[in-house]
Image (cartoon, rainbow, N blue to C red; front, side, top):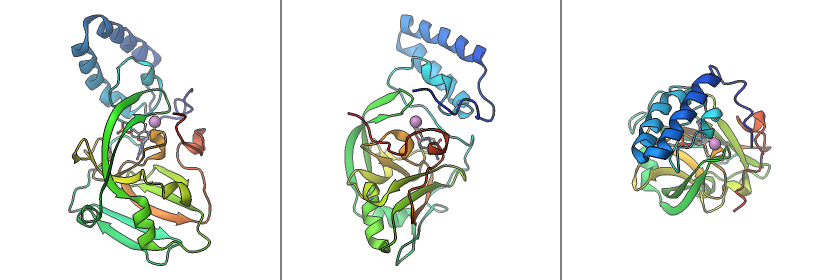
Length: 231
Ligand SMILES: Nc1nc2c(c(=O)[nH]1)N[C@H]1C(S)=C(S)[C@@H](COP(=O)(O)O)O[C@H]1N2
Ligand SMILES: [Mo]
């Protein structure tokens, strides 16, 4: 699927740069993994400015790409991180990282899919079910959706209340058995195991229970509101 973001990215990567990198990618295919790895690192700062655009065409193999729609994000740690549960709930709450770590953890292994075509096989995810946080908050009878917001100040995405309650929708605290790194949206990101990556929110700061299921950042730019994988 083509990416509607290329046009409105703040400072898109020039076509010549991307074509040059495609040339490097071809070298990587010939000479093997080392060049691919180097290319992946080389691309990290570029992808800051090309969140889901042309760089996804470069053959990097099954590796992670760093995505941020806002460029650099100020890191938060155990001392400064909070997650607020707000909106149409009986008991709004604010969780510290330690609070989240003290709640029951769910783990599962799922392949990660970005809708632009790349994937990372068999990723181990661990975190707190969004369902548990919703149960604790008690959505009111007029609640319909859940809006996830990021402390990057820009990213958001919605799910219906029912979708957000699925067992594989987690406030992820660990990937690969390690704390989620800043680049991967730590200390806490949402991941929905059965949905494309864009339905998850890196640098999660708020879960707002809403009276609707309004489109979020990428959905406003053409991604489908229903983000379920076809698999
Ligand atoms: N805050 C924030 N969350 C985000 C994004 C983003 O740009 N900003 N990109 C989304 C998309 S499209 C994907 S594929 C994944 C990428 O996660 P990664 O950067 O760990 O590879 O994050 C999702 N969540
Ligand atoms: Mo994505």
